[in-house]
Amino acid sequence: MNGRKLKSLIIALFLLISSLSFPVFAQSLADKIKQLPTSEHFHLKYDKFKDISTLIYQLPAQHNSFNLEIFGAAIFTGEDKINNPVFYLFVRSRSNSWRFLRSHQLFILADQQRLVFADGKHEGVINTNSYSRRVTVTEQTTFLIDRDVIEKLGRSLNIEFSYSVITGKLINIQAILQDLQRLLPPVKVEKQDVD
Image (cartoon, rainbow, N blue to C red; front, side, top):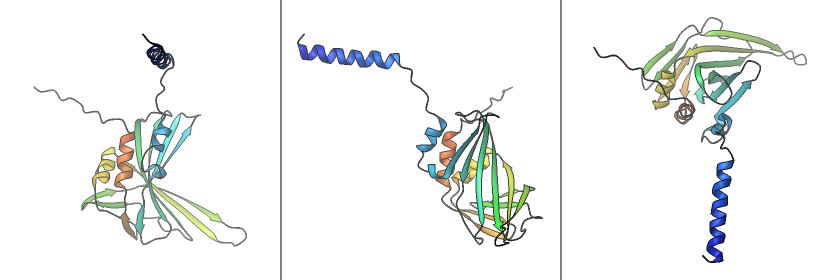
């Protein structure tokens, strides 16, 4: 065996041994999110005291109100693996007066199929600027949703919504929701007994 072949063999052997001696670590959830094409729409927060993570995702919308945001969240235990997530949709508004004290329903038409989210949990805060004496009312309504709603919206091409007097469209959310589904564990299909 000549010197060049021996040197190549030693380098290959070294690389093989070194790859076996160092453990390969699983990619963190935050790293997975950074690699998504829609990563700018996701924000991951972890509460180390409660061991709860919140994955917030923005749902871009066109509507007849300047101060309305729609976003979703998946809340789960742990930091790096989404286990048994609970899903929410949020509608947040900022204005100079209360707008949604009595209206807590969200209607969505996903490819003309009606989805009704009734009796969302409404919360509100009044902020006053001490210099300008300007009042800002921030209202948020929270809706508990199922994973199949995320899947339905992720497949829908035309998504319209109505929240009180505000109507509009969710735009370009398919890629965001498909990326969210890539982060989620597979859906478990339960076997049915055949008699």
